[in-house]
Length: 367
Image (cartoon, rainbow, N blue to C red; front, side, top):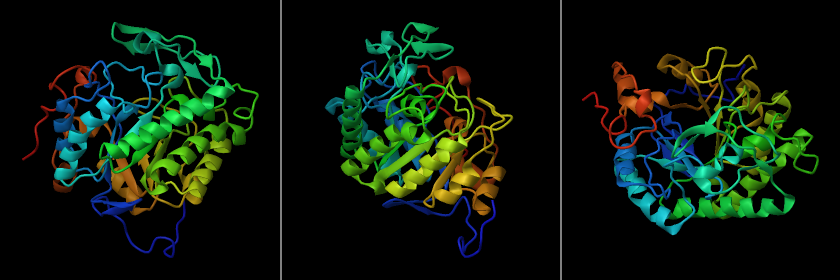
């Protein structure tokens, strides 16, 4: 993508601060959302999570693990929620710990759609259409095949919009600097956006304009609740994520980004796998160059970035910040390691979703 000096009058750097809505991030090395499964079975955050996030407060912005907006929408064992007063109170020490270390943290709001399993929620999964995800779901009893979701009825949409409103309000009560709306990775909003999972014939299906409608209404509701300056969105435009794919993503995601620009959301993050992606690969082209033309606020990119590639992306103004995932799991001091050119520690995949401190808060700092 070509940019002009008039548009970008300075050479940005990963270590430069950046304004994100109504707060300033101290650098452009963001921590992407990472499901870690250390909450209680009741989806209440646990004290160990405060230590985990505090350790990583050197990130310019921490985006929390995906956090359920409702029991219906949270089907991952030991993942946290933010729909109850008890959950809000349990998040408060976590946000305080990050802020006390000079960090910034936003809550990623999650409805898993058809990726839910009834053994976790007690409810049949819901989705835009009656479809079944491929593969197996994580449950308290191990992995089991996904179940068929039932199609949401029109009169249920207001109920889910109300759940997003409650969750966004609760996030601010809990001390978060804002929220990120999870509209990616094959979950509910992504299922509405993509024609592979949205087979509706009403005003929420068919044309790209109709498939964007649910995203737009959720964002509108959140903005009315906490303000656009505290609202970010995550999209995954290209490729197949958990069986969710669009046949012509440029026809829906560029207009979706344009709509988010119109609504004034503070920032947009894109998860974009490439030909050799670590988790998911695709020959569908990345849409960030075209989205950059229609979304003028901070754009964050994510997926398999090295420090060098991230620095180049920011310096060339292809992105305003880069979100790192796995590197932050095993390197709580990742910005320091980048700044001092120190070696990175590998993560232990077997402990990603286990319980306790091992593989969670026991990775050593460089100093």
